[in-house]
Length: 126
Image (tube, rainbow, N blue to C red):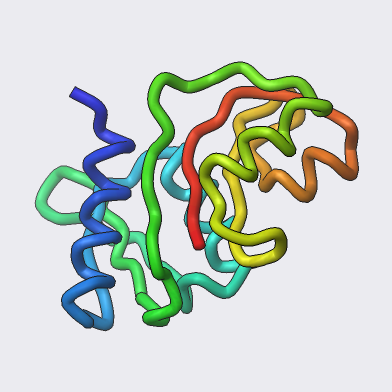
């Protein structure tokens, strides 16, 4: 079972049916990815709350996501190979972003190119 994939799927489903918010499980990776989505204006924001004994995140959707998904297997990419995966997962040049886990932290494909670092592909959004 992949918790990250399940939470991304919840966001995708709630975005498609037009809801304004959804609730996902709180993990460090999920908070970092939501920070990236907020900085790219795909979501309005999120807040953490406790439901009995579990930490959860209430994500405020901005209805700007056309598609979002997890990339499996998590391909290891070098900086020079990012362009190949952009053409595979993103429909147009500046229309979406890939989310990578790098040694310098989780970042978008544009940030990874700027810092000239590679990593593992986690997800795409456009």
